[in-house]
Image (tube, rainbow, N blue to C red; front, side, top):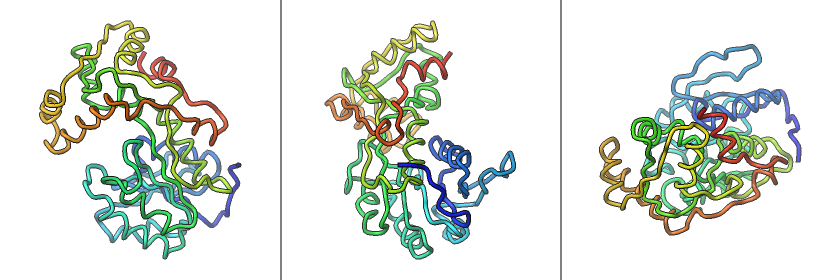
Length: 287
């Protein structure tokens, strides 16, 4: 597979363009010479000539949808954050996208959510019926959770602790850069790597392992504190809606039961290079 230009008059629309994966997808696409519409609620002008074209886009403001879709034939879909029923807002947009000429869609989902499952799983189920070319990215937990997620960053910095209800369960933590690399191939390769792609790092680690790596890399003692479901739910509910806190705590329980204890060859198979290990990530991001 190769990154082959598919027409100077066509555009890749990237939703969530300022987010963790979206910003990386935009950077990679523009570096490869593709035209990109960088869609976000508060678009900013490109920092350099030849950069992505910013466009205002809000899942909940249908007046922004037509402009965002102009000239697009491929789209990277980041679901609206915190929306319990993404299909409600996404599916009408996707039908509009198909009618506007979009022929390939790449959806960011989660390894924890199968097709037809809750939330974005309902969008996953419908995607193949809407587009002839499609892929659903199902990454495991992001390595960036330990550098950008307030609950981990704060507890590591202030208490030297990582709190979870994962017990001895393991996770194939993955670097967002690797997710973005798979996304770009999924958007631009011919033929497209259609279907669902479960994306992990090269090894499954428990939170005890993560704490040990962070300790070694930073020189600051960090430990994993294992909590029960109710303890974690209540801790999270101090900063999050109770329903969402319960959902996150429940995902930790699924990890404890082995749901994320796996690795895949997706990154290497799709991009031609191995995924980054957590230690290499920590050495770059946490020192």
